[in-house]
Length: 133
Image (cartoon, rainbow, N blue to C red; front, side):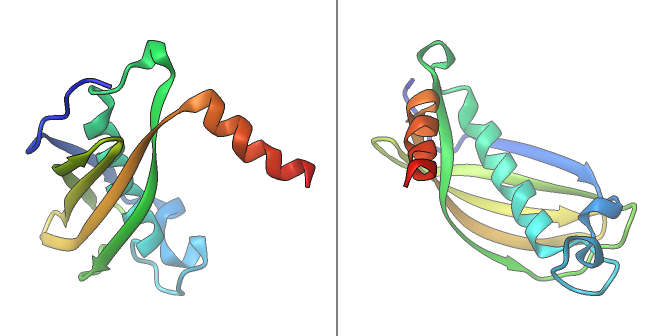
């Protein structure tokens, strides 16, 4: 892993489509952006923010280990949303982020999120050991 730069930011954006609605994913009945899909966008922003610091030839990747999020405003179908992840701490392989999310009308959520750098193949093999139990 390369040296982590505190303050590094990454913006991930998407258009809200039918696959992202609460009524579709089963987290509610309203035809609005679901909280699980907002959290997925937030995690994606953090994942992408960290990517440039990982040694891909060394099979490094990152996995989310914690997220504490608020979803404060509903977003309708066909509106653009984005999340901005910012690295706020790095402690060895654990990286912490603050994430702010917006739609075209303003803020829609915030999160604190942690990711841990792992070796992809070894991580997957260890996880797959659960299938042998």
